[in-house]
Amino acid sequence: MGREINPFGLRMPEDLKRRLARSAKTNRRSMNAELVLRLQHSVVDEPSRLSEIREAPGSYALHPDQVLLLERYDSLSLRRRKALIEFLKDTEDSA
Image 1 (tube, one colour):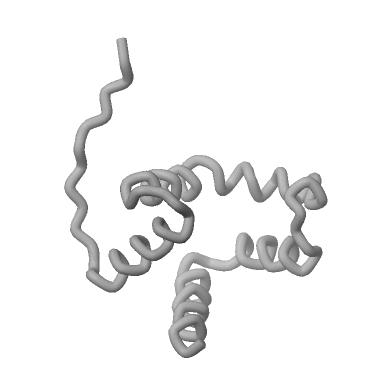
Image 2: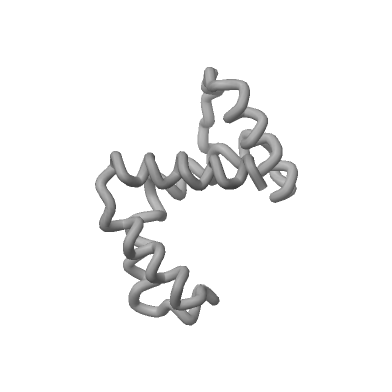
């Protein structure tokens, strides 16, 4: 029997939708595929991936500074993570 995937309606801010659409286009994915991939990463892959990166950073082709940033990000509280993300969005918009 095939895996059943039910449709899911999602409301989101227009700005977020535009950014995700741009990212999906850049990554040559549908909007649905982009959202599913991002959700999988945030729910399933991210915690285990960080420990894998710590064990073998060279296999991920990351610069040591990138590994350090990941480790520091991982140690931040949720409030500080959100603040950092907002700061980075602000710098992206002004570039």
